[in-house]
Length: 81
Image (tube, rainbow, N blue to C red; front, side):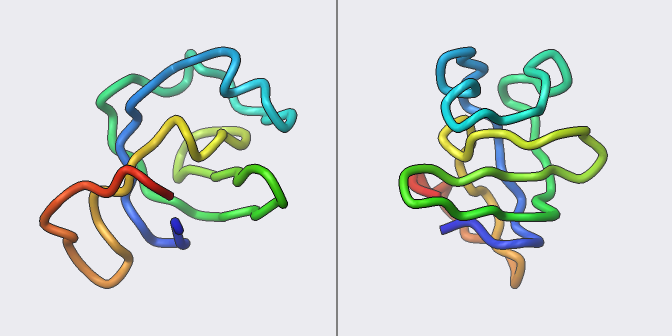
């Protein structure tokens, strides 16, 4: 599970994934391989929305993998948020 303060890396810019759940962020505002700090996490029953520092809107968490926990480095990227 992703938490506020975590650093995530974008692993996909899939339009279908972003549309699921009505996320408001524009895929053109993020880049595959880019790293972003999570500023808000909105948990739903079937999906999770992330808000990223310096990026307008919300994004489907499935577009990202966590690379650093709020408390420090993970050492290995996690595939599940």
